[in-house]
Length: 198
Image 1: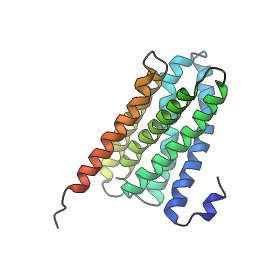
Image 2: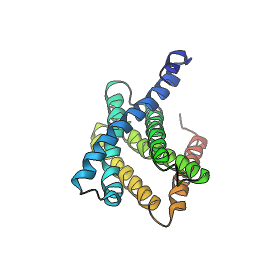
Image 3: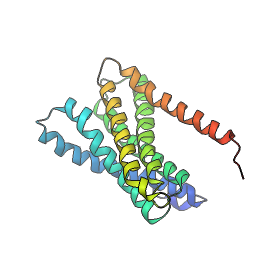
């Protein structure tokens, strides 16, 4: 995937793909961090995956977006796009690892639902934080409280997804990200139709 960066025609495409690759790298780091956290909580996988890993993963995913927001651009559309790309890259590797480790028990439908659900969940949760970071230079007094609030929202959203995935209501985990995505798309569509006063 890295050589593709050199043949993409425009800077925006390279940025998007680059942040997907960063998401893959962040997933590798998160895997190591989560292994340490699991050992600290006596190997209680259910507790760690529903209460601890959403915190560690969302903080790790937020750092490259914060770096971009501070040093390069606080444009909302750009930050939300790269944050979403990072979340997708993270989910691609995470889902691949889960599927490889569960090859004997998974079905094609489960793999598809897991891939789609986790990819959207990670993309949306990181986008929440990217939206908050768009206030870095424009409204600094809102940056810390806004980004913190959206980070907490992302952590809670991630935790709910992980809890549902490990419950008897797995189907809700796969539906939830799609519903949130639809709500966001409808809100953006309505906002784009509102005439701007000059």
